[in-house]
Length: 218
Image 1 (cartoon, helix red, strand yellow):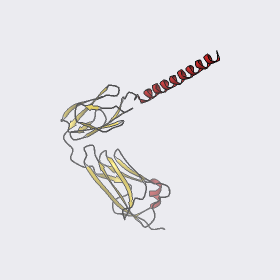
Image 2 (image 1 turned 45 degrees about the vertical axis):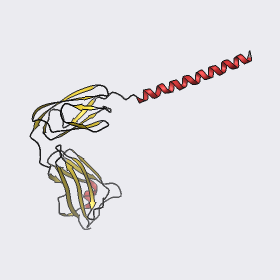
Image 3 (image 1 turned 60 degrees about the vertical axis):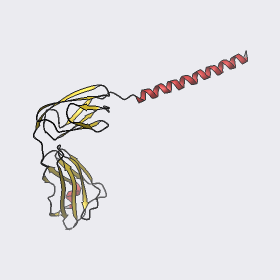
């Protein structure tokens, strides 16, 4: 009888271990299943006028998998995709389809002539060549540069020798900003250069280089 009980216990333990292995494998399969993706936004936004050589960036709430578009060329990965023209002038109904969730979404634009004009600097905290700039005001409020149209790209604050000062640069919409990082304050009687490259939606690039010199201590 004791031998029978031992045999039963061994068999039961083996079956229990097998059920755990199968259960874990099933959990792994569930974890590997990606959530269905849904369209979130587009830049430029639906309904706007775009240039024939513009690019459109679309984002999803999850990775959409393979994305196709009824016009243009799709590139990118993750939750964001870029659709590059050229697009035909006139009304454009741009239909997107994606494999993760078998989704579909249509964006409507008016396509104008190709844009071959780069953006321009329209203003900012400091002007190129400006002298006697109060470093305390710059350290407290940061630096902003405005442009003639929406741009993306990069911006940095450098010394005259070309060394990065270490401020946080951001380019978004029609402006670029530089924000102080603690311990990286700019000083008096020093020349600094704001340098970077920005591009508009059509890919027209502008090299930014703005030099200013801070004032002497009072």
